[in-house]
Amino acid sequence: MTTFDDPVLQAMAMRRSLAKVGPGAPTDDHLRDLLAAVTPVADHKALRPWRLITLRGDDRARLGEALDAAAGVEREPGDRNGKPFRADLLIAVVASPKPHPAVPVWEQQATAAGAAHLLELALWRAGWGVMWRTGLLVNSPEVRALHGLADDELLMGWLYVGSIDPDLRARIDEAPRKPLDPEPFLGALPR
Image (cartoon, rainbow, N blue to C red; front, side, top):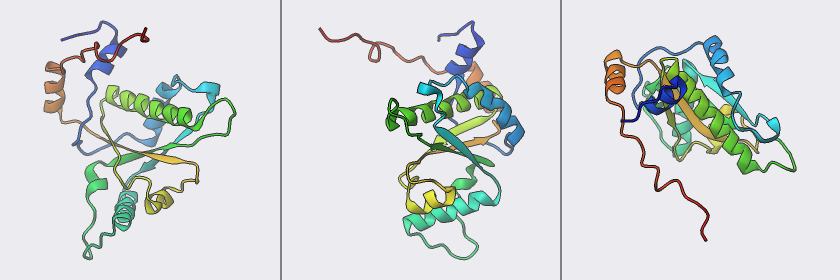
């Protein structure tokens, strides 16, 4: 097991995606504070080509309806798509490219993904559980319309955010995952 003296590196090493989070979520004010941790994301020309949309309460039901419409699913009255209710807060991550001759769209999408991951790390460090979820319907016309996306924007999924069961958090802290073997991922140019 690798441990780091640096608290930032240690928080990064301990982060987990939690498929099941509990009730509760950070407030919008808390999210605004945590967004300061996103500032250092690699961002060529400082275009800030991303935005976030929070979904709480009935917005999650609307997302379920859009996902059902995209999938061609019809539900009985009173029945709903439960997927958006796996967390009290969903944060839609939107890549929102800006026209720039030196920064291609793919690079701006990478920046948006980087911003989302930094936010995910900040939420984890602040004590929240997070799972980044996507799916085949994430950029379907129905889901895009619900989020009010422009034609050039890309919905990169949702961060599902909620509380972490204290027993689970203790188990994670006591038994960190085995570190990644760097050999397959670190190399040099071919000769």
